[in-house]
Length: 219
Ligand code: DC
Image (tube, rainbow, N blue to C red; front, top):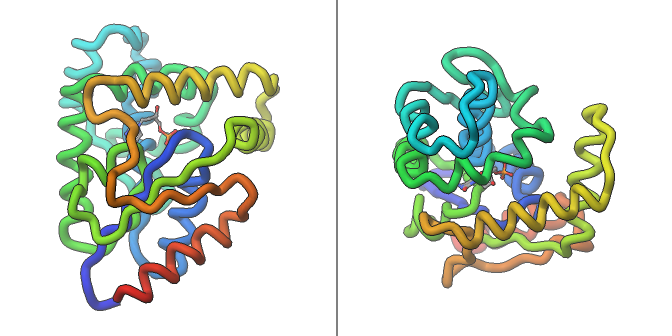
């Protein structure tokens, strides 16, 4: 690929963003950036330091002090790999509280813009097409039925060895959707020029191929 492109993929939790984005990155040979992992790494750091998720001031300070690096699927927090920890239930339940803090978002967005400045990337998150890269070459907004999203999330947790209760997972997703879409600072919202794709009854391969086809046709 000759030109420098940014593919923005937004949508609610469990809509398939990260699975699809990883496939696209692999197939196109470009870099995948999981922006949710950055908010999760910060939430994890706060958790290990016993800082309350409600303590916005301390969390904002922490965001300034820590270094988060993404290398493929590896997430490094101050040089230490944390990707094995950032998807545990306590982080799932509380990460939205961290992600809604404006100062935290400003810091993360600055890093994300830096990462997509010089090379082609596929970036997934909640505000990529609306705020991080409003001029992104390609914008997609993935959605899926809540029951399907809860099923996917349950499966993911079961595979990691957690015991899950479907109703609880569904409620947690609904709560997170609500928090992410109603927060003041760059809420989860479809960019007016993003293409919406319903992934409920599609495989990640199908969605990734649809996106790749569109990218290739317009190149
Ligand atoms: O995609 P995820 O579930 O890993 O995201 C974790 C949290 O971070 C989620 O509550 C929304 C938030 N987030 C965000 O606000 N902006 C982003 N660009 C990415 C994630």
